[in-house]
Image (cartoon, rainbow, N blue to C red; front, side, top):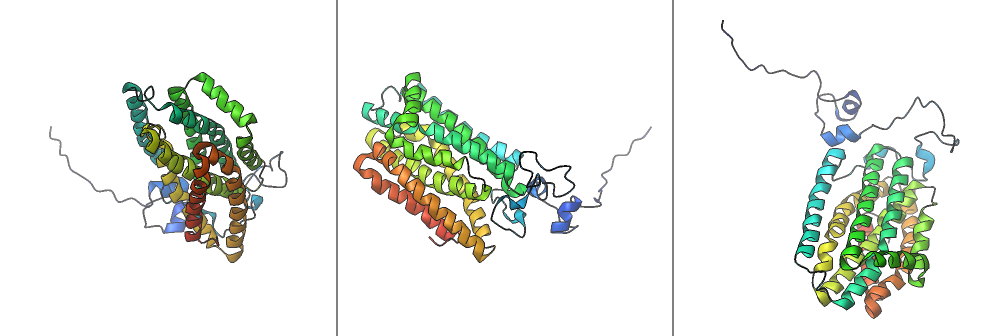
Amino acid sequence: MQIDLRTVSITPLRQTYDHIARRLGADKPASRYIEATMDVQPQANFHYRPTWDPEHELFDASRTRIVMQDWYALKDPRQLYYGTYAQARARLQEVAEADFEFVESRGLAERFDDTARRTALDFYVPLRHVAWGANMNGAYQCAYGHGTAITQPCLYAGMDQLGIAQYLTRLGLLLGNQGDLEAGKQAWLEAPAWQGLRRVVEDTWVLKDWFELYVAQNVALDGILFGLAYREVDAALSEQAGPTVSMLTRFQAEWFQDANKWVDAVIKTAAAESADTQALLGQWYAHWRGRVQEALAPVARLALGDAGDAALARAVAAVDARMHKSGLAV
């Protein structure tokens, strides 16, 4: 018996799914990101309106005052779908785990300057609660946003914030102990310096317009807070006592740089949609920028003393520059 093996080239009848082909053309292959994102959200044939919100359909563009001709224009320049998101976060986490292991194995936490240790614990541990609030807000944006292009990365950002809360908890346990976590919770609930920020976080929880929440959380609060916490305060502690805290917060610093690419792209695309949309985004940003800056002023002074106001001003200016570049009148 003789068996002949040969290679046969099979030409596919089409390059992608019909709903993708309607956007790209039938002969153009789509990336995995496009296939996992574009027009995934249902648009018709809903069986009922939500019993908790009968004024809206299950997926309803009118849940925000922002109007977009095509909600799928708000694409993520990082092209994250679940597969690439998991891979990207695994790489960040591998580095973070190596940093924590290095600090522990070399005894850097035990030898850390006591004054800097107290500053780090008093400043970073209460931020666990801010990160948890951001996780709630990311879930809300995903649940009530419109179009998978924006809701998908909102969910990823929310889950990342839960991870950040966990890393801040580990920082507290490594530089301190369980008592420092309890002290951080009590500071968040009762200390005067934290009540302004706590009010901002809790006020974002009751925002109905998910796109305003996006501006409040992802642009204003994350933008200013992360610039203060993981640039300004981190730099001051490094100068005072070495890079131990920098290593324990590397995940947050690198995550912030990565997330900004998406946040800025969304604002830029939305602002270019119309003059009305641009103006509304500018109003939202100005409002929440002012509230966040006021709330963070005592927190900045808590960590940096008299240098806190200048550090906070630099963090605000950095976000202003990003928003100006994205098309907002700042």
